[in-house]
Image 1 (cartoon, helix red, strand yellow):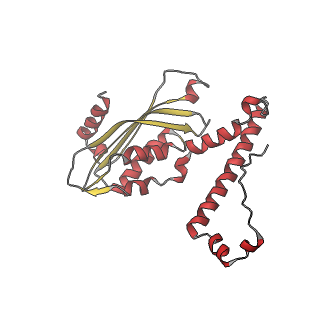
Image 2 (spheres, helix red, strand yellow; image 1 turned 90 degrees about the horizontal axis):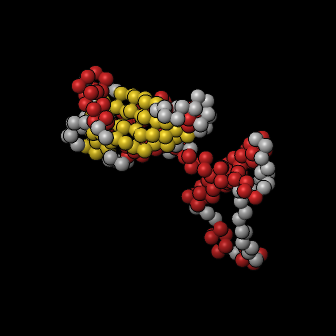
Image 3 (tube, rainbow, N blue to C red; image 1 turned 45 degrees about the vertical axis):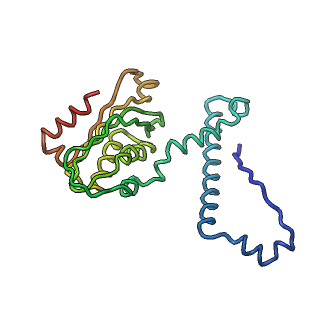
Amino acid sequence: MKLKYMKQEKTVSPIVENSPAHHALSTCDLDECFEEDRERQEEERLGSMADAVHTLLKGIGEDPEREGLLLTPERVAKSLRFLTKGYEQDPEALLMKAVFTESYDEMVLVKDIDLYSMCEHHMLPFFGKAHVAYIPDGKIVGLSKIPRVVEVFARRLQVQERLTQQIRDAIQHVLNPRGVAVVIEATHMCMVMRGVEKQNSVTTTSAMSGDFLTSQSTRSEFLRLIGNR
């Protein structure tokens, strides 16, 4: 099976095609050419992914040609592209768009950030909450950028331990604050619907730097604040 994306071709008469005006209009600028190339590459990628899903369906004993599965390969390919879109985003560049000079030097905490990711070992979802705090040292970041950074790293194949550290490291590198703390609490479907099948298990990971590591009172304040629901 090949997933094909059909585009309607426009026909042009030989007289118009050979005219200087047509050549001027048909020559795309750099941005247009880049966009066309990007769209072509995306179509090829989706097609390859859909072919792989078609093979998987046959491998599990299904009939990919039956009515309910005819569009499944294309749907799964598009779904996976969305769920892994973080590979094409730069979290540090995203943070740098909203960095401001400010004298505030107390803890900034954004907690209960919804998080959805995929385990790289089984490609099954894990989901939960992320809590992110930092202590500014002359620079703050727009609050919405913190959940966005969580989202960028989560939308990749992940392990929770690395995800926690990546969020901390990106904020530390861009803002150079006095400290960063990240805690993630998540349920992993690879432990719930397969394997040990423990439906109520929750995995908690933490990654800290600066004052959150060296100051017991700062760390305790952070943990107390995220514990207050």
